[in-house]
Amino acid sequence: MPKNSPQSKVRCTKHRKRILEISQRVKALHVGGSFSSVEIMDTLFFEIMNKDDKFILSKGHCGILLYVILEAQKKLSKQQVDKYCKKNSELGVHPEITTSGVEASTGSLGHGIGIAAGLCLSKLNKKKSGSVFVLMSDGELMEGSVWESVLFIAAKLIKNIIIVVDNNDLQSATSNINTHPNLLPLTKKFKAFGWQSETCDGHNSADIKNKILKRNKNKPYALIAKTIKGNPASFMKNVPMWHYRSPNKTELEKAINEIIDYEKRL
Image (cartoon, rainbow, N blue to C red; front, side, top):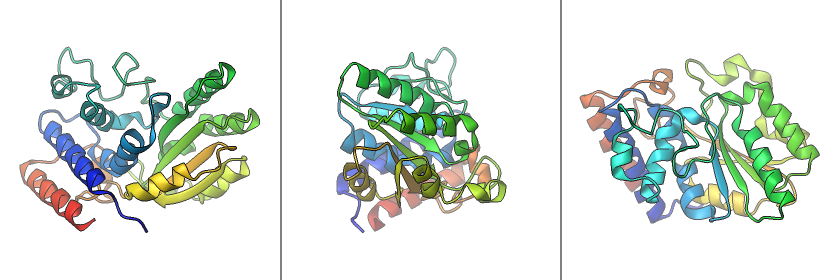
C-alpha cells in the first residue's frame, strides 16, 4: 500500500488542528465526521481537482472541514473562518452557495448527488470540460433520492461524476450495519446500477488518488472510502457522541498530541 506524501500529512494535521481550535469557540460543529473525511477532501482539493472541476459536500454537516480547506486554499480568509457560526457570520454549520468556493447549499442529506447530476449534464450538453466530485456520507445512502440519482446518472450515461462515500459505518447514534444491513456491500449496489465502484483506505491519500486517477472514465464512478469516525483521536474513534460534541480542554490537549503522533507514524 502506498504511503501518504509528506505534504499531505502536514496539511491534514493542520486541518484537524484548525477544526479543534474552532471547536473551542463554538459547539455547533461535527468533529468526528469531519475527522473521518480529512484525507479524502484534502486529496481531492490539493492533488486531483483542477479549475474546471466542481465539488459538492453532500454530507453538509461537515461544513467546517470544507471551510478549513477553502481557507488553506486562500478562497476564504482566516477572519471569515474565525467567525464560523458567530453572529453575522456568512459561515454556518451547513455550506451555503453564497459562500466563495461552495457550489451547492447542502445539509439535508441525499441531495448532493442529484445536484451533481444536473451540473454534469450541463457540462456535457455545453461540451465543457471538467468533472463533478461529490463527498457523501454512508448514512445518507439510506435516502431514496440517492438511488434515484444513481439510476438516472447511469441511464443518461453521465461519465464525468465521481462520488466518494465516507464509509465510517456510523450515523449520529448507531451503526449503519445495525439499521440497514442489506445495503452492504456498497460496491455491489453501485455496480448493479451500472457504475464502476471499488474500495480504498479513506485515510491513505495515495490510495485515494491512485484509485480515482486510474478509474474507468467511460462510467460513473463511486469510491467507497473505508474510514474511522474521529480518527486519529483514540477517544473519538467509533464513538457516536462525537458526531455532535466538542472536546473540553483535557480532551483537546489529548487530541492534538495524538494527531501529531499520527502524522509521524504514517
